[in-house]
Amino acid sequence: MTNSKKEFPLTKSNYKLLIAGIVVIVMGYILMSGGGTDNPNQFNPEIFSFRRITLAPLILLAGYGLVGYAIMKKTGE
Image (tube, rainbow, N blue to C red; front, top):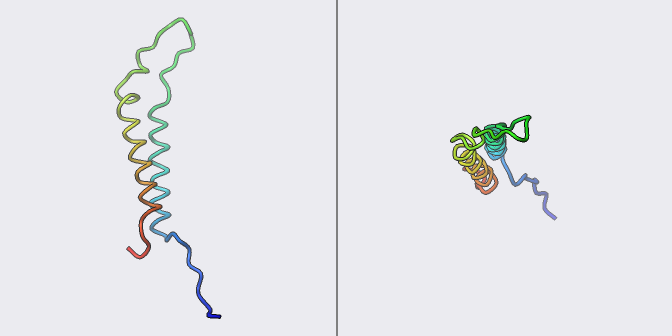
């Protein structure tokens, strides 16, 4: 039997990218939140703002893409 050093499948750079992706995802969900009203009989058009309908989903997709890249990135690069 040979003594082989056990290596983790992800490196430090992978974990940094993973954490950055999670932060971007959290920012996307924060941008998407809000716009509600306390009165159920009153409509708030703010729920259909550019930030909630377009910007936040694009940021979420970028965050999920970054997480996927962080997991799939080869070690040693």
